[in-house]
Amino acid sequence: MIKEHFSLLRRSLIFFDMCVIACAAVTGYYLRDNIGPLYSYSDYLMLLPVYLFIWSITLKSFEVYQSFRVKPLIENCWGVWKAGIVTFVVFASLIQLFKLTYVSRSLVIITTVIAWGFLSLEKLALMYFFRAIRRKGLNYRNILLVGTGPRAQRFIEIIEANKEWGLRIIGLVDEDAGLKGTEVKGYKVIGAFDDIPDIVHNTVVDEVAFVVPRSWMDRIEVIIHFCEVEGIKIHVAVDHFELKFYRAHLSNLGGFPLVSFETGVDRLLGLVLKRFADIIVSGFSLIILSPLFLITAILIKATSPGPVFFRQERSGLSGRKFILYKFRTMVADAEAQKADLLKHNEMGGPVFKMANDPRVTPLGKYLRKLSIDELPQFWNVFSGDMSIVGPRPPLPSEVSDYDNWHRRRLSMRPGITCIWQVSGRNKIVDFNRWVALDLEYIDNWSLALDIKIFLKTFPVVLFGIGAK
Image 1 (cartoon, rainbow, N blue to C red):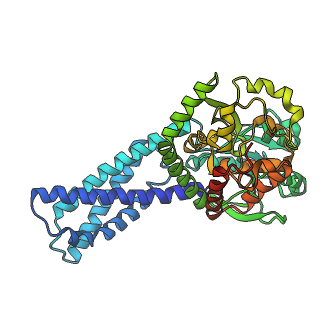
Image 2 (tube, rainbow, N blue to C red):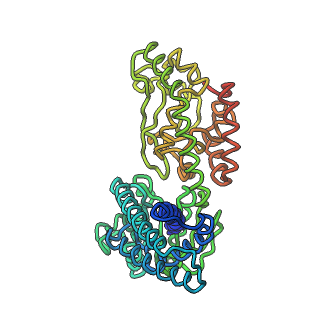
Image 3 (cartoon, rainbow, N blue to C red):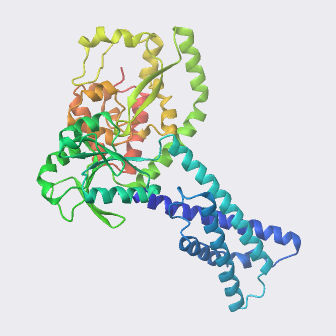
């Protein structure tokens, strides 16, 4: 799983390139047809799959998709140009071999030149796009490396040689506390084994890689169990390691064997489709609901002083911080009054819930009853901080009071609605029960389950079930 993200991206790019070349073929046909009449388009259409197949083979042969995000533009384009030349020669040879006299040689030349141009522009756009999101610190997986020995150093070299995988080592951990502060292959040793819980809680860690001597296996078992409880994906560089974990699978990183254990969701294609659906649904909702947004904003402004939107920092996937948006349903200084109301908390655990909260405005009660206050979170979904379905995003202060097993709910992108939401939401007053529902969702996640929860949300919202 450590490099499967790149494999899926590469297959997607190949498919996209074939679409671009098909567009070039159509463009070339109509340009050449304007110069002089050609045979029917349907006659040429039969040859398009062959032309695309040759392009796909030559592009892969010239390593156009290998390290494409970190290569210089000229090197990427040069691979495309070489692939185009070979494609032209092979395709023209096949035309000659099978005596396809109706095929215009000039059409093949024009189409190949246009494909060169289209693909070069595409690579330019992709290069700037990926570099831009990388500059913003996005599209990376943060890895904490446990181990500093020769095998760990080889692991670092593999990561450094394959930057297109989008992996970033945030630091190293060793059993010897005396190594703290030293550097290995340019990376700092940021702690010892006992420091790992603090590192995980105070730093964004997506995955932990154990590259340690076999003699350490019994010493890292406690750390592995800690990662399992918190829902952090781990990779152990061993040939065989017996543990009763929720899921285990073999993976390979440039010839480096790994056994990966995880309790979170590991269905990459499904997660990609989930994200695609999130973008479509949230974008559509933001457009369709814009009149309701405007009306709600006017009513909030007209009925109570203060801003229209309530902005609050929340913890998302793997503890990433983001700003959550809601329509304001409380008085402007609601947060300042919270300390005085903690004694009325009806929720067990590090969460505050209170019936008849005096801070809620008269309009706010109706907005909450119909869940209209949650609608601005479609922007959080569209921007990638949240999903339509997923565990509700907690406050960072709540996360700091979590038990270790509570933190596994952070292994899934937070959502607008969840199992808790459709199971009575505020009727559930035991925080441990709430977390158990979230973990049940994570452990049994599928697109079908998301659709089921999404559909169940409508009657809950319409009838205000469990709302306060």
